[in-house]
Length: 134
Image 1: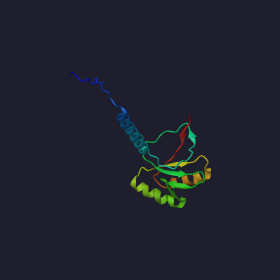
Image 2: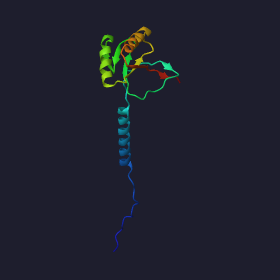
Image 3: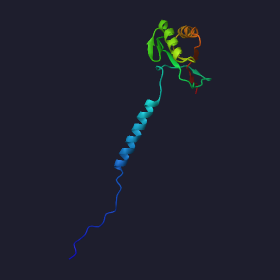
C-alpha cells in the first residue's frame, strides 16, 4: 500500500535577513561618513566671492560670529589672548596659515582689528574664508 506523499515544494530564497544586513551596512556607512567630515570652525554665514578656492593645508581657524565674539579653533578667546595662542601654534608649524571665518554680518572694524593683530605676528600667513558664488 502506497501512502499519499506530499509534493516536493520548490526551494525558496528568504531575502528578508539579507535586506536587514544591507540596511545595517548602509547605516554604518552613513554614520561613519558623517564623522569623517572635518568641521574646524563654528557655523557662520560666510560672504560669497567668485575667486574662492579651497586650501590644501590644515590651517588654524579663527571664527568671528555676528556679535563679534572670537573663537580660536572652536574655543572662545579674547582678542588680547589671541597673540600667545598664535605664537604657540607657530612653534608647532612654522608655515602657519590662519583662516579668518568672519560672518558677513560682523562689523568691518572688528574684522580689521583681528587681521591687524594677526599681521603683527611675524611669519603667519593670513587667509579669509568665503563661499563660492553660485
